[in-house]
Image 1 (cartoon, rainbow, N blue to C red):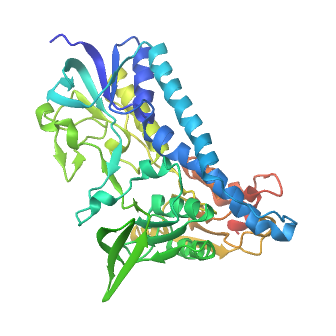
Image 2 (cartoon, rainbow, N blue to C red):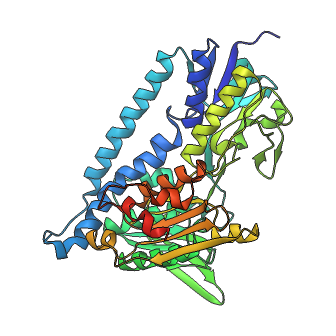
Length: 449
């Protein structure tokens, strides 16, 4: 059958733009469809705008810690000015992404796409067909089934706030809750986290999360774990959150309640059944080539595929894999080994490779090097007592199996451990590296002793 396009892409984020530009550069016709401004979650509603807000919070936090270094002015976070800087960035990013697609000769549609057949889509009243279709629609907040759920503010909306409310409750305990709580607390808000699980940041080492808990306390953030939110009600000009922890009922009054309880692939509105695209447990059924197991014309990448962790580097790799398979036939599968993960708290916490629990479950023989290193120069120079590490080294090969860090600038240092894991470097080889001193990276040999 003759199709309108060689490739139709649902979404315009990191994975989508990678595939679009590569396939178009190979001479194929490409159309990109997005119901929101072009650019995707990371650039417009996630990583980048969050880091811009975090920069202001980090400056306030650092100044408050630096009184022993002679800093005397009381730092204040001017939220409207900070938001103006964030808005300038996202507006410019939207424009540049539109220009990127246009400059490559990629047709763009603004609207919500839905399948009408195995090789066809509808965007409003417009119908198109394509030889291949890529689902790269990202993720959306998981639906919370409780009274008053409509009063929840999404992470997207939090990043757009013109004014920072005085009292904020975050429902959930992952990346969003941890990062946003630190931003809000440094902005002067009273912050409470209500987490159903028994600890925050379950994707990170529990010992390091325990060390980081001290920073939540110093920022004045109230953390209630093992707590299930039951309802959100309005009371005059405030919201009242009711939660349950064991036999205890917890009620918190708030000006804002933020949904931080996780995200799922944004598949609900795509009418996948009409496209013959199988879904199981809310996830696309894909083969090792990121291709639909039921419709070979369809591929997926990034958060919509959910084959790897929900991280930007994973979306980028997925994009390269799909582009290669589209252009050269199925031959490439994603390799997520050594993909680092960071929660940009103050200070950040980072991980790469196996956790200690995963390594033990695999019956690997390894040595754990771990310490809360508050007395090391890195911690003292930054006036930040939360600084520690846990590094797993395989006994027989001396290869690094996993690295877990918390403290100043570990969001950069974790990349060196990621490189070592992907390159299968040994701990002894990494210890021989002549790192610039004094830097956080120069602590790596001591972490391997």
